[in-house]
Length: 254
Image 1: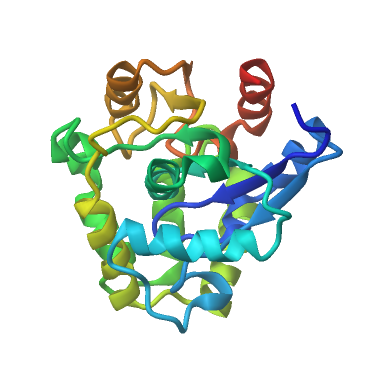
Image 2 (image 1 turned 45 degrees about the vertical axis):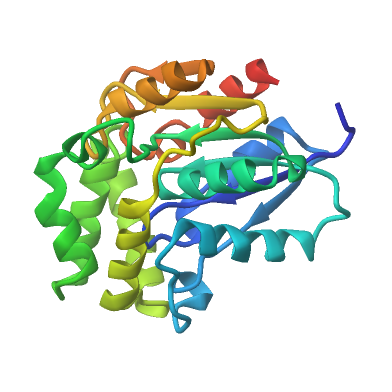
């Protein structure tokens, strides 16, 4: 195992690197000698004026170019949430020699589960309002928090603080409706690869995920015979709800 690893952190649909919250800091405490690389897909964060890709392959290629410019060529570890995990799968599938391992959190792949598991029907309207239709930004971010979080969302003080930050991000770097739609199309189109990537992979899920059925992660783990860890109460965004749990599971896996 190398003395200094590089960790690449990938967010999900229409979210930027700041939406990781304190997770990078918590991860750094577990791996103080390692490098943490944060990335925004085109259309998100400081890149909100760029056009989002409509394929996961294009997103992967963009990511690889970014990472290669910031590392020495040593294979990297990936921690990826939701749509970000799809990009990680594509990267590992096309260029396994560049990836030392990956942690896939709360993800789903077309071809393994029906569409109503990949995005639970109770969230269809929320996604449409968040991505396509204009609405009050405070209402939107509160709605998103309750869609992806259970633990933080149940704490009024913490949830108000998180939503306040998210509102600031959205005001500073708003994601356009067209870019949100382009990212959604990319995620919907991505299909499980015919062959399993030749890279060590850990799958993390929560039984209380109200956005994507936890069965999607279980199906992926069974399909590729991967280790899987299950949180009992966190929401879709497990690193937000319980960063310590995620880091401990990564340490055990390594």
